[in-house]
Image (cartoon, rainbow, N blue to C red):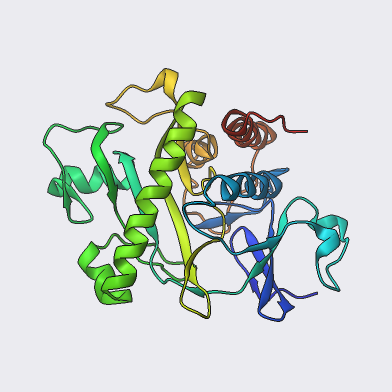
Length: 286
């Protein structure tokens, strides 16, 4: 079977009748480079966490999921063990061609924009904020949806309106902020700060906006341990930061082809993904 699309971390297969099979791999990307060393279980963790969040967002927005039960997949995908736990049969959508990002805390590229302009994606913010500061309210900070090999660039809300129209822009802004705020309310009692997230939307043939791809995973969001939150510097996080730090420290960030990862970095990265899943959901990872 040849995928219709093979991306940095997932593959899409044509399942017929307007459906796709989305399979999350264990491939890891960093600094827009796919690395040759997989992270064991990563694809399964992202898939299972997305499914968990789909259930908890069902009253906010519908999603593209048909089933994640491999026994219910159409031929030739039925009961294939390599797809178990890491795949979803989904409805094919017309994707919204904007990266929809919401932020509740200042971090990363947002801090760089703020330091340069006092705003993030055209949204003015109060003076005196630092890396890790909590924002007065959740803000919508979209970016372009760049092709593979290019970098997403920050854009303003007015640019989103120009790109996808005023009505759709208003809907995705409202939904992105609502998704982040709903998820923050789930995470905070569990000792986790959800600083920001990126979500993907698509439209059904009748024009309904639905949630697509993965949602609220360590690949699409910044999760910080609340116990160590200290504005003024980069925060520890439940993601691939150990890997990114290793690449930067060895001078191999953005290197192509990417380097093989040492065993200790692979294990440290896997441990963070497992910790995100278990602490957010309260479930064990076997």
